Length: 226
Image 1 (spheres, rainbow, N blue to C red):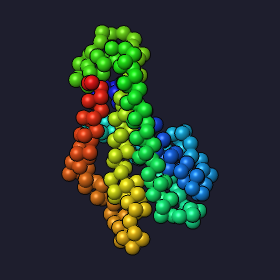
Image 2: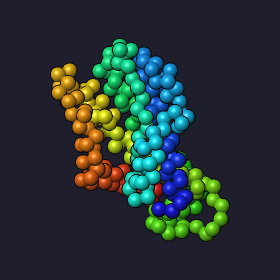
Image 3: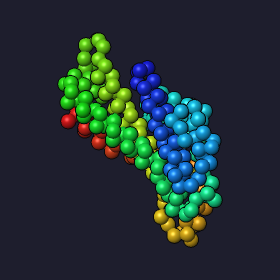
Image 4: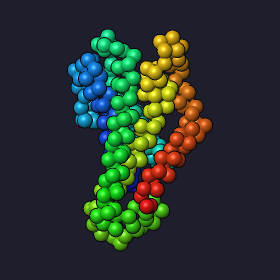
C-alpha cells in the first residue's frame, strides 16, 4: 500500500472510531446517563477517544501488513444506575456505534455515485486505483481525490460496523445480544465476557475476519465498477 493510501486510511479510521464512540455516549445521554458527557466523550474531537494501542499501533500494523484497517478507542463509560431500563437501554447504546458507522458508509457510497455522475474521470481513477494501475495522467484531480477518501470511508466504516456486530462481549454485538435474551439467558451468556477477547483473537487467527471482509469488499467494489 502506498504512503497516500496509508495516511488516508489512518485518518478515516480515526474519524470512524470517533463517530462510533461519540454515538455510544450521545445515545447514553439521551437515555438518561450523562457519565460520558461529563467526561467529555460526547464529542467528535478524536483526542477524547484515542487509545494508544487500539487507535494508533494496531491500525498501523494491520495496514502495513495489508490487512483490513480497524481498531478501537477508549470504551465509553456507562452507568446502568442512570438508565430507566438498563437491559433495553444498553442494547440501544451498544447498537449506536455500528449504526453510526453504517450511516457514514452509506453517505460515502452515495457521494461516490454522485461524483461518478458528475465526472467520468472519477470512475476511471477509482477503477485504476483498485486494479493497481494509474488510471489518469499526472495532474490535480480534486473530485478524484475526494472519491478516494469516500471509498476508504465506506470501506473502513463498514468494516468497523460489521466487526463490532459480532455477538461476543466486549464487542457491541455482545451488548445487543444480551439485550435481546431473557434475563436468565443473558446472565449465562455474560459469563463468557472474561474470555471474549481471546475468542475474538481466535476468530481473527483462523481467518474469520476475511470471511467478514470479503462480502463487504465485493459490495463496495461492485458499486464502484458499475
